[in-house]
Length: 323
Image 1: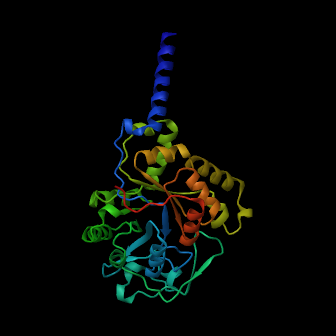
Image 2: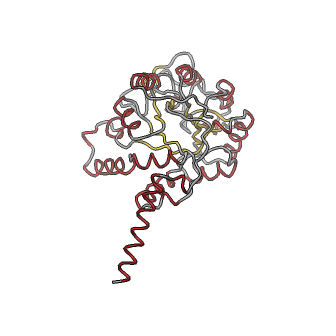
Image 3: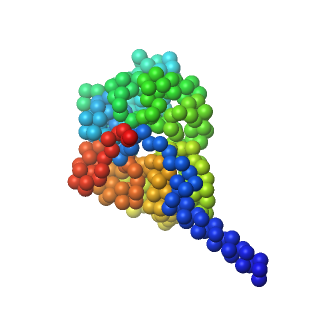
């Protein structure tokens, strides 16, 4: 009997302490400093309104007032850091070659039209700018705009060169980098721990496990940004024919959405100074859901649509710089 009472009191003490720290994490953890706050994030510069990852796309997004540019980096044969999503150029240029096998001066231009990955049956027709830019070009053109860098390949030289560029242009305080690969994120952090990192996929799974076991409030976290998809967009935008999804696919999507899209999780992380970005959302219903759940920011292919939504609904935008 005494043993049962002891176990019960211990469990109750754990549950109550966990609940308290979930609501008030700064009782245990120092809140992370946030040099910028991003509500409006332009995915690949806004791939639904301009050709993805071009200077024209980035300029359009910045002119609209975006809080952050999201982009992808690779390295050419002559070790130039370029902004492009795919390792192979076929989808974007029509030329079947790997960026790593081509010198920067020999890179082909983008095609006139590119499909928008996160919007079913949507094609973006570009203007005159079909040039694959250097990361340096982006930093020089937008010195005060936060940039979210996806390191697309596990390459030590690429990671080192990106870090050197960030330092050269004095952007450690307005840059975040990483990848879904835990190995890449670890290398990024080791190369330059002053540049904030994203949660890798492995760390996201760990985060969810800690949250549902009540352990999250007790665990220190080095990451400053959580970027997660809204699983429900799979059925709306990524499947060519949602009606042909199997029952198991529907169940998996529902379960992932239920586990990830949790207001309590988002609130806990933001209270610790960890910004939560939900991607890639392209319609008003999803914008509203993400903000209602407490997401810090939304990543979109349609920066004009998101800006209009935020203005119409009074969703506060940041000033890119916090005191």
